[in-house]
Amino acid sequence: MNITTDSPRKIGKVGEDAAADFLESQGHVILARNWRSGRNGELDLVTKDGNTTVFVEVKTRRRGSHFLPVEAVTEDKLAKMRRVGLSWAYREGWQGDYRFDIIGVLLDQSNTPAFDWLKDVGQ
Image 1 (cartoon, rainbow, N blue to C red):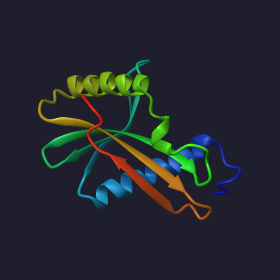
Image 2: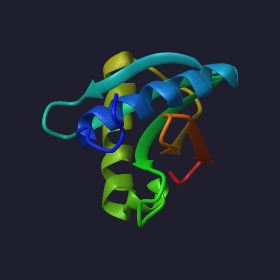
Image 3: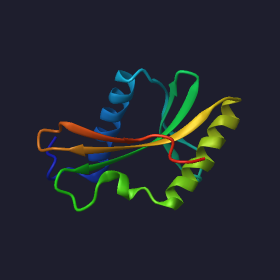
């Protein structure tokens, strides 16, 4: 992979894979990846952290970008994330504790990720 010429989609995939590995290293169990709710949107990751289901938005940028990855998550994106997360819960027949997290992934030239993890960004 060439981080300077690859498409944003490919870079995003690298970031999502890195975020999934990172969360697993923190004890999370991955329940779903890229889960779509029709035209409503997509959840990058759905994980289980103990007894809590976590809906995760992953944003990836190259080192040297003008903005940090987490700065790309707007209030509108958070609202959509909440709607899609609740749709996932309904379709899965799930009940219990949940939260919404954002993981920013900053990739250097060798694709080594640095993480910025914002937990419980709001119900």
